[in-house]
Image (cartoon, rainbow, N blue to C red; front, side, top):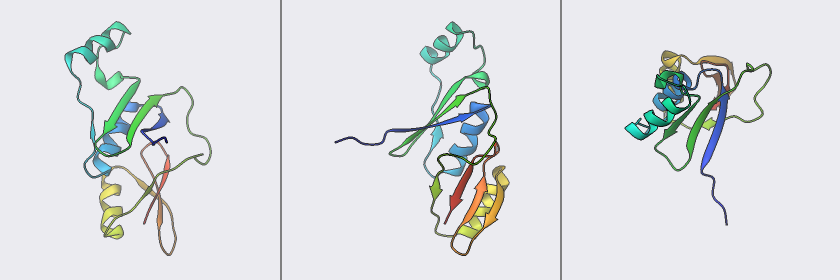
Length: 123
């Protein structure tokens, strides 16, 4: 038997997108940087965690990894996250305040985009 452990999201700036998703999801946070991780980053030429090419967000059963890629998102995601909220309207407003944008609305859900344009659904 296997279990899902990580979802990896390609992006242009992992640190800022990780902060968005850590704020968007209950109980999630950007993994803290200890001295060993800072030393590892320095060994690959990264002096500032803001420039980290891979940033981990954890706190739930599935972790989110954000990894830098050179290309921008051009078309529809091949994978997206579906979120559920007790009060979808209030949650939409909160996510907009974090930097999301509404892409379109349906009767039962709203399609939003994170700050890099990755679409996700909220029910």
